[in-house]
Amino acid sequence: MSDPINYNAFTRAQWRAFSDDATLPLTQESLRQIKAFNDRISLQDVQDVYIPLVHLLHLEFDHYQKLQQDKAAFLQQKKHRVPFIIGIAGSVAVGKSTAARLLEVLLNHYFTGQRIQLITTDGFLYSNEELKKRNLMAHKGFPESYDMAALIQFLNAVKAGTPLIKAPVYSHKVYDIVPDQFEYIVHPDVLIVEGINTLQLPTSEQIYVSDFTDFSIYVDAEPSLIESWFLERFELLLETAFQDPTNYYYPYAIGDHDEALAKGKAVWRDIDLKNLEEYILPTRNRADMIIHKTFHHRIDRLLLRKY
Ligand SMILES: Nc1ncnc2c1ncn2[C@@H]1O[C@H](COP(=O)(O)OP(=O)(O)OP(=O)(O)O)[C@@H](O)[C@H]1O
Ligand SMILES: CC(C)(CO)[C@@H](O)C(=O)NCCC(=O)O
Image (cartoon, rainbow, N blue to C red; front, side, top):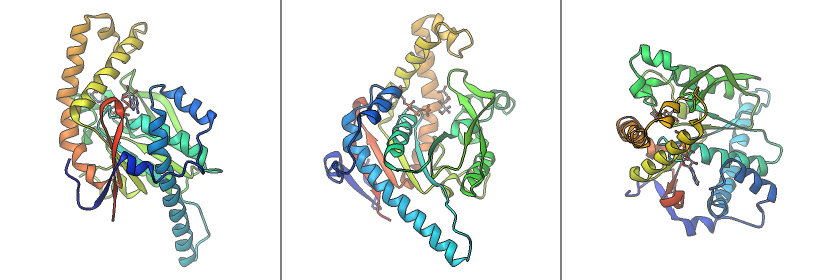
C-alpha cells in the first residue's frame, strides 16, 4: 500500500526502538495469560510491537483524562472520569479479537489501578431470525446487518458513566446472537471495542461509532493472507464442531471435508471478502494507527497518524 501523507510509517525495527523495556518488563504471569488464550502469539511481537503501543496508549489516556478534568472545571461541573475507548477495526479473520485480548491483558498489567474491559460489536448484529426477515443472511457483517442505533446508544451510555450496561452476545459456534446472554460493562476506565465496523460511517445515523473512540487501530494484511487465516480458523471450527450437534458447523464437520472447505472458500469470497473490499478497507485511513501483518501474523509495519 502507498503511504497516505497524513501518517508516519515505521518499520518494525524503528517502532521497537520506541520501547523502553526497562520500564515495562513482561512478567511470567502476563506471558502465561497471553499464551492461555492463543499459544501461537509471538512473544517477540508483544515485546517489539505491543509494549511501545502500550506506552503510546498510556500517553493518550493520561492526556485524555487531563483534558476531561480541565473541561469539567471550565464548565464548573463536578470532576468525573470518562472512560477512554479504544477501537479495533479490520477484516473478518484478520486477528482483531486476538489483538484486542492481547491489549486487554497488557493494559490490565500496565495500567495500574485502572479497570479494563473488552467488548465486540458482533453482539450488535441482528439475530439470524431478524436477518432472515430482512433478507440479509448473505450480508452478515455488512453495515446494514448491525443494529447501529443500539451500538451507538451503548457507547453513549459507557461515556456517560452509566453504572451497569448490558450488551448482547454473539457466538461464532452457534452463528447467532445468544438469547438471554449478556456482557456487563461496569465503570471501565478503558473499554476496548473490537469489530469490523468501528470506523464505519452508517448512513442511518447522525453520529458514528468513531465519535466515541479515543484511539483507533486498524489491523491490516493482504486479502489473500487473510483468506488463509479465515480458512485455518474454519478448519479449527470444524474440528471443535465434530462432537457437538448443536454447533452451526456440525453438518460440515461430519460431511465430506472437501465440500466443507469449498463452502468455507465460497463464504469468504461471497461475503467476507466483498465486505472487506466494499465497506471495511475504505475505513482504513480513518484509523489513528494501522498495524500491518504479513505471513504467520508477523507484524512488519506500523503507521501512525500525524494529525
Ligand atoms: N498474532 C497472531 N498469531 C497467531 N495467530 C493469530 C494471531 N492473530 C490471529 N490469529 C489467528 O487468526 C485467526 C483469526 O483471528 P481472530 O479470530 O482474532 O480474527 P478476528 O479479526 O477477530 O475475526 P472476526 O471478525 O471473525 O471475529 C484465528 O484462528 C486466530 O487464532
Ligand atoms: C460475525 C462476523 C460478521 C464478524 O465477526 C463474521 O465472523 C461472519 O460471521 N461473517 C459472515 C460470513 C461468515 O464468515 O460466515
